[in-house]
Image 1 (cartoon, helix red, strand yellow):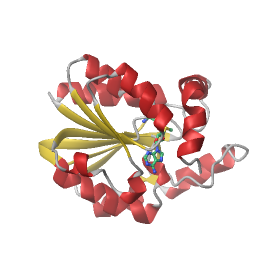
Image 2: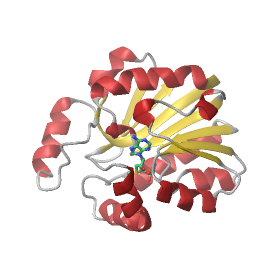
Image 3: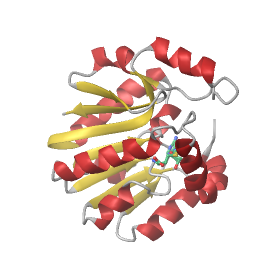
Length: 205
Ligand SMILES: C[S@@+](CC[C@H](N)C(=O)[O-])C[C@H]1O[C@@H](n2cnc3c(N)ncnc32)[C@H](O)[C@@H]1O
């Protein structure tokens, strides 16, 4: 699993690697652009004003919302990713912090209309995911939503199938979302499949 230094090294080439994997329809980023576009559209449609992005990376998604005038907050642990994103979004409130230890105090004191996490929360183990996501619900304004776009599957069988087909590249240190195994923990959890390895999970407050 990449640590913050690993992501620092990846930061400059990140958009290119992701774009290639998406275009070639390969694990892990097949469906990436469609998921980000879907979240972008949904957030704008909901008339959200404040958005929190957890693990924002180079800011691919949030800089588009920023350009539409939304107030962007975020947390990431890679100083290089933060530098790239902050250049694109000078007024955004971006903080450095490891989300496995929770959100920064500055972010905990605010409320958001939308909370986004794309291709970041698979760094939490399955046991860590549930309490972390639950801790985000009180940070939502009424009617707010959490959007998680990631390597994600409807059930464990689909994950195992993808793993078998992508064995040469499969990352055993990442913990991908399985909708069937999470739905009992979140009322109002929805799942939409975007490719053989990507899905969008949404949770309404
Ligand atoms: C694969 S990138 C995704 C970036 C962006 N959200 C996107 O969709 O392109 C994962 C991001 O999460 C950040 N990240 C990974 N683990 C983290 C952690 N434990 N705490 C904070 N940020 C983390 C990385 O630095 C990186 O910017």
